[in-house]
Length: 176
Image (cartoon, rainbow, N blue to C red; front, top):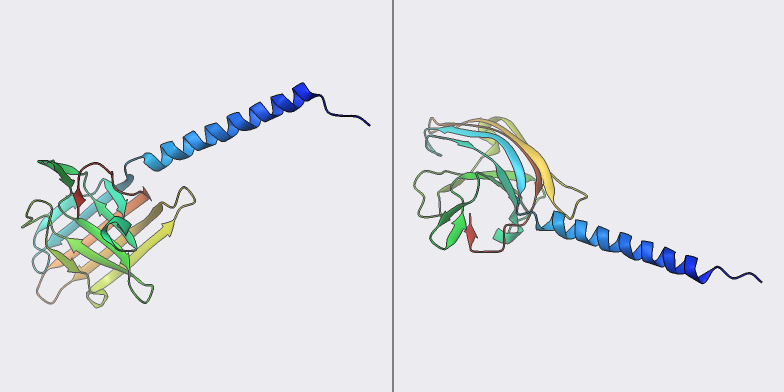
């Protein structure tokens, strides 16, 4: 009966432990990255959203705000001891499992509390929202394309792409 060399077994165990530690460190590093990235712009004129152009740069998971989806926003800002953003696109799954968009106007904000208006699908020539879970630590990626004209006379155009949206940073208070 032949037994494996104990020193070879110990070497294999050391390599396996090193691989596990390296994978754990990589997982912590990727999960702790404060945000995902976003590119594109949201343009609104007239009612109901007001007039603005907002270039997006980051995205966050909606679970911190109590919804299933993502916030696509500019970079986080600081105001006193709080962190948050002014303006963006909230993409969330409704009760029927459909993706819905809500525009947060950067106009008329009180610190980080800004006016929000749901985008009614029937007013949009293009209403394409896609949010998918990535395989990397339950982050989300996707895109939004909106071309809308509203009865009040306003318009909305959004073309944004987002990748690896993560939970918001834990320090301070980030508010939608």
